[in-house]
Amino acid sequence: MSVDATILGAGVAGLATAHELTARGLSVRLIDPAGGPGAHHCSWWAGGMLAPECEGETAEPQVVRLGRDAARWWEAAGAQVTHAGSLVLALGRDRRELDRFARRTERHETLDRAGIAALEPDLSERFDRALHFPTEAHLSPRDALAALRAGLAGKGVEILPEAPHEGRLIDCRGLAARDRLPDLRGVRGEMAVLRTSEVALSRPVRLLHPRHPLYIVPRGGGIHMLGATQIEGDSRGPATLRSVVELLNAAYALHPAFAEAEVLELGADARPAFPDNLPRVVAQDDRIHVNGLFRHGFLMAPALARAVAGQLTGQPTPEVTP
Amino acid sequence: MPTFYGTQVSSRLMLGTAQYPSPSVLAEAFRRSGAGIATVSLRREAAGGGAGQSFWDLIRDLGVPVLPNTAGCHSVREAVTTAQMAREMFGTDWIKLEVIGHADTLQPDPFGLVEAARILSDDGFKVFPYTTQDGILAGRLLDAGCEVLMPWGAPIGTGLGLNDLYGLRTLRAQFPDVPMVIDAGLGLPSQAAAAMELGFDAVLLNTAVAKAGDPAAMAEGFARGLEAGRLAYEADPMEPRDMAAPSTPVLGLAVLE
Image (spheres, rainbow over the protein chains, first blue to last red):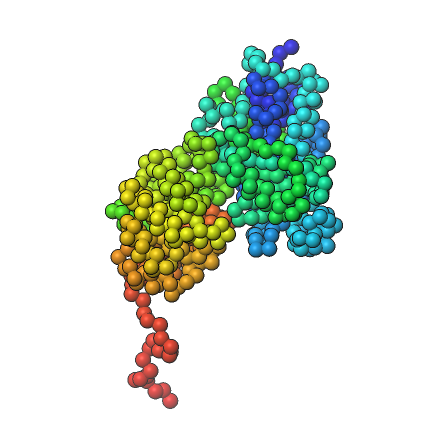
């Protein structure tokens, strides 16, 4: 059987592209020398918020527009997506940050204490004002990557450590593609995973802070993922004490009961980003690059995968092509 | 334009490089404002030694002198080590010296600041100390070898403007020949204009631009505010007075019946 496309890299960009191409009837070969989804992919460490509205605070409008379809795509691809919206909060002296955040984002409503209590009872005692983004969703990144992998396996696509390149070459290697994309840079992120039975959140919560903004994404079973630092640099070494202190301190500020939580995991990696922090589909020599997903891997991968599929089937999607 | 340690800069605006939505937006802010110096925080971006190289390449591409800083340092030793790393990394002996005394207010530690300024000056650094409006402290920093002072307008990141006009005016009058940069606390171009009207030589800001909805437009706004304020300072403004003073003579008006 001939192969229409060979995809390099089995992180979120590679898997999403492989899924989209096979869904459109193309045959693909998926190569990743490090194997299937794991700690060597930066998507392994992601938060999994499908939050285009909130990201609109700092991201370019394309991210918001393209990201609004992400939740639907992931669901259709077999991932479990939770449609519970997201909540944005600020502590007393940072309350005006909420006004700024509200001005720069869309599709939100303001909640008072009773409104917060209805959504997140554990937080209503400490907060009397929040922004609620009801259209947003979240997923568990590692489960979602596993779902894509399983779906591909069901169609006979396995992740090969090495294989000849056949058909169109799609390069989804993330930061490793810097050998061919010189303006790609690393932006380091650090995260923590906690388990507690004393606080239960039902949706991603963002805590605005001028220096140490935080988000917490519930994973179910009392497990909460805390993220994420954003430091210019391509270091992929372990999380630093300073970053961990900042993350955990912010969680403690959100709810003191987090002080008793177990720290299950600390992680760090470097996100690939272009100078404008926007993702790109770039045709170059023998290949098409899908890269620069920055902090929007799960939010942007569907739109990029569709753009690649469009190019391969003769219907280019101009808005993600420079 | 002001001269710092014998180097004349091209603008009275100095911009920090942190917290922008993206490096492209940062570059656009520099382009539109014509900012003359870029400050870079070494402490935060240095995770893992050689990391951050491509970000620094982007900063170098801005084409303006780089002023590395010791932001986030809470002790003399930390600040001195960070300054030495910065000298190596950026090939400049300029250093904006921050020794933070309190984690919440980010107020300078005056005692540590003087000590670190002396150590670094003796080591050949050209020190730009982040200080308060205190005149005695300013004198000690000059004794320690500093030839530039960077008094705060208000605590870092507050956007409150010039908090102590009397203190800043006194400081300016006390050391009329020392180049002074208002560093930190500015939120609006009108505040930068006010700093110019007081006779300060430049301003340094970061959050006010980086966190604006349109950072490049805000940077340009600051550049224009600085220009307006400086023109006013050089134009020798009128003295304010209590009583109204008509701008046209009252005597000799024609009396029309």
